Image 1 (cartoon, rainbow, N blue to C red):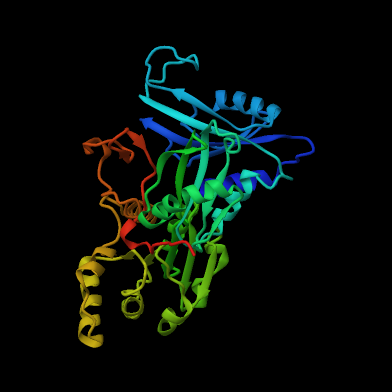
Image 2: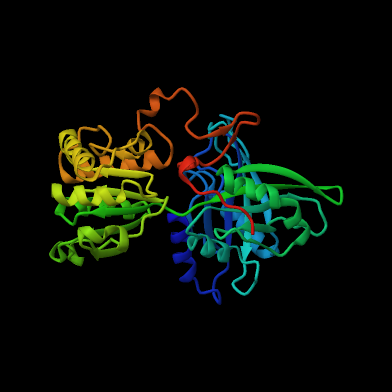
Length: 395
């Protein structure tokens, strides 16, 4: 979601009396690519851009194509083949072994079909949604760039009725299974190709404990675009100057955590208060929450004391499913010692958890780096914690 936020911030600063713009979206990847489908980039007619569709190798040509789209006022899909090690259409041999389709759409701030308004809507999602966008079409009434959304409330949104009727089942499937895909349809015997995208809220980081070592954790999370909340029962710990990048600082007594602190299936909880009794009480209230990740700072013996207290005093027996969500000691094993290094360890583990990855060395990974469809070698963005997310059905 950080890319969406960055694009929207840049968009809001554009003076459309002086400038024109277009939005590029990666809609299909076969083979290897720096970015997965769903990556977006805002491009201005003065050559500036925000976001990315590659590692920098496609942006220059995409800007040239964007100027053409801006002049014509019509969306178009551009295909880049980076599989040739020798010179290709870009004039360089990228050797990335991938074929990337990029949809480029003109932006009209006054138009009801402005693609930026969709990004604004996505940022407000508090649950899983799905979004379909046409990137190839010969159908008369279905131009490239036509969209249908299945929002986070389970409601269908779109202006093309035939398209909505055609895609409703597939949009539900994307939201229910948390798995994006590409599909071809036919309308009036004319083929259209659609990218069905999974839309999900960004990671919500909730830190219990406002100590000095929580600051670098909030800073790294902010860099990644996560929502960052810090809570502590000691108001003196929640000094804004210590956590300038946190989205929320909240004072809450330990006994009221389950009443005053919101935890969702997208929340990563970190306990780093350095207060054993505080952590025990917080764990008692959050162990059965929707949080797919609960990390506890400190050695394993300390965590075992917390579990023993839950068992002996509160008759709470940690289940195997709950243990899968609890990470104690917290973090990846990278040899971290300083607060900054420990923050890297913590943030890396949360990212790995939410991406269904082990956090090991990529050099030892036997499969491709990005998730692929085995049938057509298509690349899709990694699905986050599929089994924890609630299913969405159309009303």
